[in-house]
Image (cartoon, rainbow, N blue to C red; front, side, top):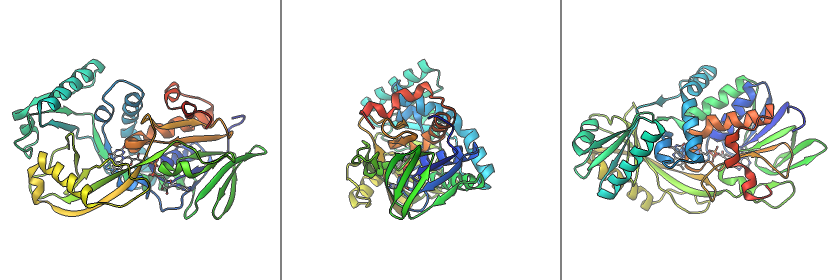
Length: 373
Ligand SMILES: Cc1cc2nc3c(=O)[nH]c(=O)nc-3n(C[C@H](O)[C@H](O)[C@H](O)COP(=O)(O)OP(=O)(O)OC[C@H]3O[C@@H](n4cnc5c(N)ncnc54)[C@H](O)[C@@H]3O)c2cc1C
C-alpha cells in the first residue's frame, strides 16, 4: 500500500464484512459494502452467536490466541456499536457449562481444565452433583462438567444489522442485490466488476464467506481456498424454569435467551452449497439436546435455520493482503468463529489497510500460506 486509501469496497455484508466496514468508516474512510443478499443473510443469520474460545480452540495455538483476544474486545465493541447504531445488541456473558456423559469425556474436560489453569483462565471442574446444582435441568446421564465463566453469546443478526446502521451513520453506503464477479487492479485503482456494472476504489476487502472462491482475483480463475461446511441450528421455545447458561456437550450446544427462546446447534456437514435444513439434521440436534437436558422434550418447536460456514483446510481464517492484486485484503475463512472473531478481524484489517501496521498475529492467518493468492 503506497498511500492511505480513502475509498474502500467491502465485498460481503455478513458479520465479518459489516464489522470491517464499520471499523473503516469510523476511522474516516469512504466505504461501500456490496452484497447480492440482504445484510447478514449468509452464514451469519444461522449463527448461535456463542463466544467460547476456550471450547472452540482448546489447544494452544493461533486460533486460541485470536479468539481469546477477540473475546476481550467484546464488551467495548458491543457497547460502542449499540450506542453508535442506536439499537440494543443482545449480549450476555453467562459462561458455559461443558458436560461429560462418559469417562473419556470427563478425562477430556479435566485435561482442558488443566490447560486453562496453565493459561491463567478461571475454570471450575464439577462432579455430577455440583454440575446439577449449577444447572438443575441436566439429565441423569451427566457425570461431570467444566464451568468457564468468561464465555458468552451475542445476537449475531442484531449485531450485524447494528454494525451496518453504525457504519452508515459514519457515511458508509450499502449496495444490495449486486454480485461481485471479478476484482482486478488497473492504473492504481481496484476495479470491482459486478453483475450490475463496475465500481472502482483505492482498495477492497473480500469478505464473501463461503463464496469467496467463486470470485476471480487479478484476472485469474477463482481459487480462494474456502469451502462451505453446512451448519443447521434449531430454535425451540423453553417452558418452565429457564436454563442458566450455555450448556455444551460433545454432540450439541444449547443457548438460552432471556425471552425463552433456546437455540440448539449445530450440525457440521460437508454438503457443498446446499442450503437446506434436513430431517436428519433436525432429529440429530433434538436427540442431542434431550440427552443432556431431558426437559427439552416439553419445548415448543419454532424452526430450523441453516448456514454455510466458510472453512479452510487448516480451520484458520484468511486475513491479510493479496499477493496478486495490490490493495486487496482478504477477511474470510472464519469457519465456526466468525461472530467471535469479527471485532478483532475488523481491527487488524483496518490497522493494516489504513496505517500499514501488520499485527504479528496475522502471520498465522496470512493468505500466503496457500501460495499466490
Ligand atoms: C449453524 C451455525 C452456527 C454458528 N454458530 C456460531 C457461533 O456460535 N459463534 C461464532 O462465532 N460463529 C458461529 N458460526 C460461524 C459464523 O456464522 C460464521 O463464521 C460467520 O457468519 C461468517 O461470516 P462472514 O461474514 O465471513 O460470512 P457470511 O455471513 O456467509 O457472509 C458472506 C456474505 O457475502 C455475500 N457474498 C458472497 N459472494 C458474494 C459476491 N460474489 N458478491 C457479493 N456478495 C457476496 C453473501 O451473500 C453473504 O451475505 C455458526 C455458523 C453456523 C452455520
